[in-house]
Amino acid sequence: MKKEFNSEELTIPTHVAIIMDGNGRWAKKRLMPRNFGHKAGAKVVEQICEDAYNLGIKYLTVYAFSTENWKRTVEEVTGIMNLLRNYLKDCIERASKNNMRVRVIGDRTALDADIVERIEELEKMTAQYDGLQFTIALNYGGRDEILRAVKKIASNVKEGTLDVENIDETCISSYLDTNDIPDPDLMIRTSGELRLSNYLIWQLAYCEFYFTDVLWPDFTVEHLKEAILHYNGRDRRYGGVK
Ligand code: IPE
Ligand code: IPE
Ligand code: MG
Image (cartoon, rainbow, N blue to C red; front, side, top):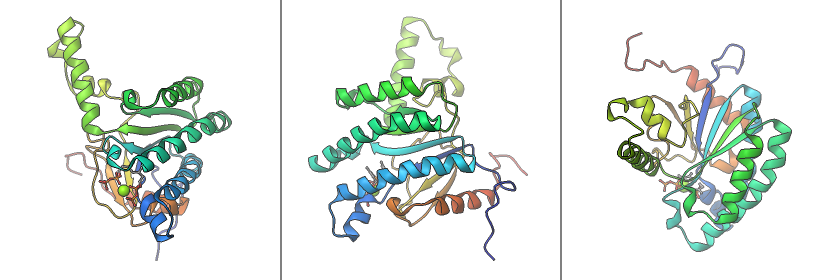
């Protein structure tokens, strides 16, 4: 018998990280251009933010665009960036309505100036909100994030503001884009791919992984509940013995 979802009896993961994959295949199945899939995917993000918060999830982080996604055609990248422009604009209103705090992680230097401006405005306007703590990984790569952190650490050591003896795991975490966000408890990847694709490689060290064949535009709260049920069946040992 399938286990029922009863949030009172379940452990709800504090932080869920999602690799929203499969937009292109979803569009292809409908004989539509890839950007049609991205548009449908963006709608799903809005819904999942609400659902996640209603289920008791405090932090949600989604992978929107990786440092490797620039390899796609100019048409696709332009389409994604335009979608993002609209998304960020609408997000300001939705965030204030839902008390949602929005942060963006990743390397902003490669993004268009108007997008960076919108991100800064959104982060500033929502900084005090204590509802869902929503993070968008944009032009994000785990290796790139670590590389940028290492450069900052090296330059602080050089200028004398950081002592080599004080570099420990907590210190390194504090130099990452996710410095004020706890590590994810559950990572969900849609579309059947079984890899990390450079997502949060430091932060996911002890995370539980859940993979589903569902394509991102088809992902609903029922799939999210299914992932949480699986999470509840896991035994998190962190290297110890239970
Ligand atoms: C994920 O869907 C969205 C982004 C990477 C921007 P994809 O565009 O990777 O969809 P598939 O994997 O080609 O189906
Ligand atoms: C990962 O998906 C990036 C995002 C979902 C934004 P990709 O579709 O780019 O990953 P690969 O190419 O299958 O590894
Ligand atoms: Mg993909």
